[in-house]
Image 1: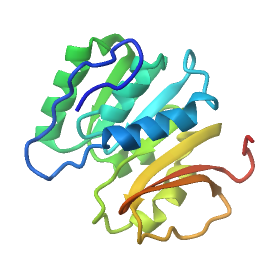
Image 2: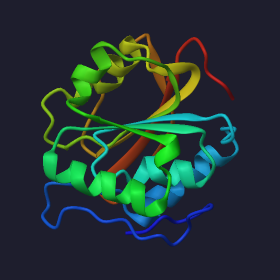
Image 3: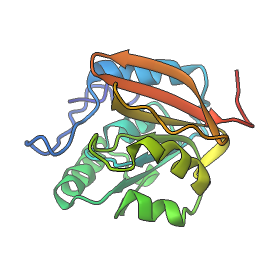
Length: 186
């Protein structure tokens, strides 16, 4: 696994050796960032990487010029790799690691973000309600994006808070981009 573009292109990223973490593949990560490229001003972008794992998505955003990224991860083994990856890529000045539960973080966020990545475990009990929970927390900036990687069979519980604006399928994996119902940009 590597950073695929930007200032740190080609830098290797490490993760746990077992299947407890499911990092975004280069194909999926490349597609996500191609979609974001014309929608985000990277120079001022603030990024939240929930269920960060190795930090692959947030580090990719920093490599492409994001101003700041917050990584939230609770698994101790993943935190070791996350912190090592941030240091090895050299983005410590623009990164903040929160060691803890993503849902607990969402109960008292300190900021809103232009991009919120959520790559939760597929077996997460409340996965179908995750977009609503995240939008209710206020972490998604008014014209920001929530991007969730999820299994193909999942149907999100409808909400008046958000709407899906981009959906891409990659085999059994789907990536859905959400925006606020009230602040959608074309």
